[in-house]
Image (cartoon, rainbow, N blue to C red):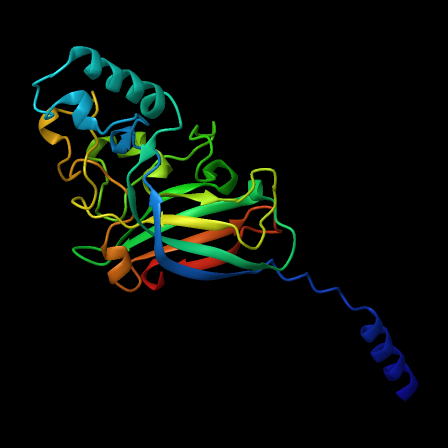
Amino acid sequence: MLAITVVLMVMVYLIRFPLPNPPPTVTYDSVNDAKYPVWGDPTDCYPNLPYNWEYYLGNGTGNRTDQARWNTYMDAWNAECEDGNNGTYNLTDAARIVVTGVSQVIPLSAIEFKFICTNQTPRYEQTLLVDGILSNMEWVPGGSQNLSAGAPTLGTCATYNPEGSGANSVYYNRLGFFDPLNTAVTVLTPGMTVVIYIHTPDSIFEAPNPLEPQSTWNQPDADDYHGAPLWCFTVPGSCSIELIDTDWNYPAVILDAPVYML
């Protein structure tokens, strides 16, 4: 009887099921001492011309000192800011999530980016300000500003709607972007950075442009939305950023960064 028991114990020991490998992990540093161009908003862009805007537009209140100069500025603005990608954009404060380590190879095309907003009052509400694939949110500062075909649009942030009824027509780059450092690299690599704008409505001045009334030129840019709401950075638990590996055995959260800590 003892021999049978020993044999059974040995058989049970030998028939061991392999444990699944753990999901990937990502480490990061948070930095909030940077300034980045507010890419994605042509009304915050100046064309690259030899003289400042007053030379071309007069005092900006409709008194055109020289129609040819006016046309020169507006033509350049359309070419470089509205239709092109080489204008000069205003700068705003930004927080950065810098990847410092990755436990295994993860394609950027398999990583889902979520900006999650949670509000406790006047009622509990959780929404997604951005939900998209990381490779569709790429931009290397100084490079082409053309959006990818799969670029995600903005939703709402709890009870806050960044663009009124038009929120879902505004792309992710009003919130921030993903800097891969090198667009030829297709897997998550240390040094790659998620940039989130920190913007209050009066921190950027409207650039002269044909889309906005002249009375708004060089005034606080109160009608535009850039970055996460300020309460995301001041209220613990209100906002977070998740990166999710969708290629894993199940959707695995590989990075969870509280925006309050950025």
